[in-house]
Image (cartoon, rainbow, N blue to C red; front, side, top):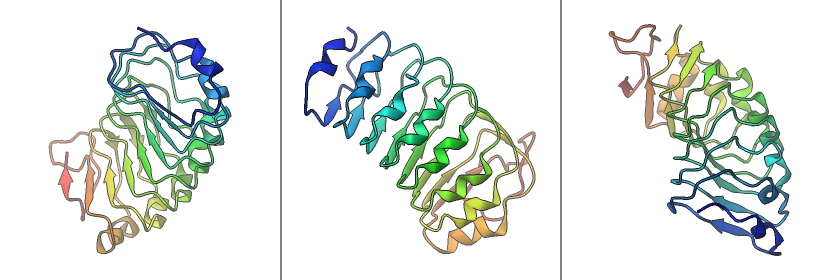
Length: 207
């Protein structure tokens, strides 16, 4: 079945967990007009269409998971208005386009999962503004360019997955310094067989 439009008429619901239910169709725009909503889990369904452009209206959202669906289009820039968001999971969703720079305004973000999509372009240079980030996964996309030095400013980072992309250049020493702190898992396209490849003196795995 699909997500019923009538959900938006139910007041005071803070959590919607409809994951792994074989849901089809599109996400109703009305879901994001729901001001009390703090948690929305729609992962592991067969949802299609685009991610609603009014997603930024749900300003109390703290955790959003859309992974494992079959969307089209890109990540709406309005996602940058979800200032209370701590967890964002958009993994394996067939998403294309670029990583919107607006996403770097989400200063409470601890988990950012954008892996296994069709995202292209570069990593926003302002990614270092995410000072509370613990997990950053953007592997298995079509990203290019260099890996921003500003990632080295995210002192809380524990997992950094960059592999399966087309990065070039060298991973900055400031990022390698994070390995002396909390960063335990650092992967990039640094294997000799990778074309193109990035130079990495501190990666835990080259993929």
